[in-house]
Image (cartoon, rainbow, N blue to C red; front, side, top):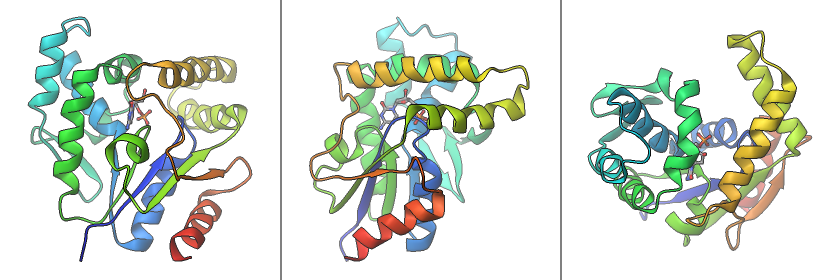
Length: 216
Ligand code: DC
């Protein structure tokens, strides 16, 4: 049987990871959040004090990055980094790092390696456009930015009760702009992708909507 990859792209907090995980469980596919690959590299950059401006050193970290996913735990170079992927200092630099062409090339190789022979649901910004343009099922998830900011705020306020919704909204507007305006692989709707606006849908309802398209 040929390997099947379902791609889900979309802006930050569009629900793609919660939706992608549930869809993968229903289909018994592996789930890969490609943002975690970019984030895992950032953990090593920060740990080794490598400045985002040291291009060659940054690229080398990604070229040597060994990624494995087991039971939804994310291992980078043999270490379980799952709990650090969303550390604020990682989030701060990841947009700039993921805009580097050579970093994206190195991550592309990792993406092909970890999907080899495995049916996969992969989420990201360029999965249906650049990484698996021939995928049979491609989705683009989106939601109103105020709703996305509210979702992110509810996650963050659990860790930091002083955080303000307005700050989260502003950060999200900036991140959307960076992801959309960058020269290399900008966030865009992949050709042939089914667009789902889930502003008024919960995770289950979004997966149901996708399943209808997959089964059609
Ligand atoms: O989805 P996320 O917030 O974990 O993604 C982190 C960053 O990585 C985000 O700024 C965009 C970038 N990214 C990307 O450029 N391409 C992908 N396929 C996935 C993420």
